[in-house]
Image (cartoon, rainbow, N blue to C red):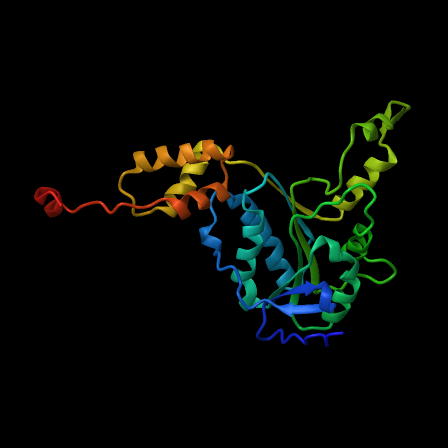
Length: 268
């Protein structure tokens, strides 16, 4: 068995839980995405920043669930958040959904540290019959022992309620005295998401918003009409307009420098 790595949180801002070594591994190469690089999600940025700043000041703050359409900036927002607030004492631990059963051990290890930790779960969702969400529930709201004040959970998901929703569950709901009583399965689905006090929704971009993101990525391109035409065609081929599509277009588009007046006259 490998000896667990001791994390020096004064010099390490992020780590990931690794199942095979049953411990944390420092993340040395962080995604460099910056707060100002994100486009079209200003409302979500402001809400998450406000919650995080309260957390870093030791004030009441919520666990956060970022849910919605794929490629709309949920994961990028979490990464940019760390880059923005690491110097203020924010630390982040990435935990895969399949490793949530280890959450109590992870939390025990960091609860006495003089830093503020966000447990980050990306693309979080559960299928019927899975039980690992129970460990997440205990960290979100505690059991006999209250969750530590220096730990919050930020998760991203394509599902609003994190769990599968079946038509059969709705059919099991009942009416009594004019009041709707949801079926137990629905109550279970909603109860998990309800533990995230801050829920931020993300939607696919309108064409105008998509082109704003394109313009931000190509500030020096003079021929906006041609740029937009190609960007729209790229999005149509992908079948979706979002921040990820804009980034993918940016990575393959070749910017042709605009010739100077002298070059134009000389025919170069």
